[in-house]
Length: 115
Length: 111
Image (cartoon, rainbow over all chains, first blue to last red; front, side):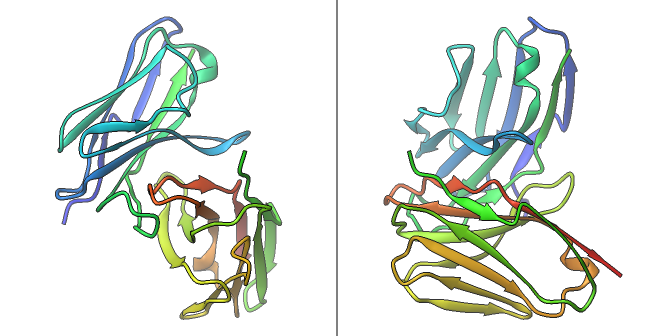
C-alpha cells in the first residue's frame, strides 16, 4: 500500500518567493496533519484537518502560512512570502480518524531552505 | 501549555548495553505514543499506550505508561546498531487525535 506521499522532497528558494508543499494522504484516512520539524523546536503541529475541514490551525505561525484540503486525497501548505526562518523539514501525516489512540502515518517530509 | 519533556536528549552507547528513555509531563494524557525516526524519513509509530500502568513489549523494547498517565518510559534491552535513531514520545489529551511531541532522544548504538 502506498504511504503518505509528499512533494517536493527538497525545495530551495529565495526569500520572498511563494512556496507550495503538497501531500497525498493514505487512501481512506480521514484526518490529515501538517508538522514542521527544526532542531530548536522539534516537531510542531501546524494545522490538522478532519474530513477535509480544518479543525485546529493554532500552530500556524502567522498569516504567511495557509493550508487547504480541497478533497480527501490532496492537501497543500503554502508560505507566501517565504522567509529564512521558515527553513525546516515539513511533514504531512494522516490517520484513519481523529481519535486519540489512532496511529499517525508520516510522509518522508519536504526539506525547505529559504535563502 | 502542555509540554512533554524527554530525557536524555542524546545517548551514545555500545552494542549490547541496556538503556531507558523517559518522557515526562505535568499534564494527564489520554494516550501516549512512541515513534522512531531515521534520517531523511518521517517518524514511524512503535506503540500506543492508553491505560495507566500499562506495559507493552515489542521484541527488545518495553514501553510503560505511568499510573497517573503523565509519564512514560522506553527501555531497550541489549541495544543493537539498528536501534540507532531519534525516539519521540507524543501525547494526546483530547479525543481529537491532536498530538504534542517531545523534543526527542537521539540514540546512537556503536558496534
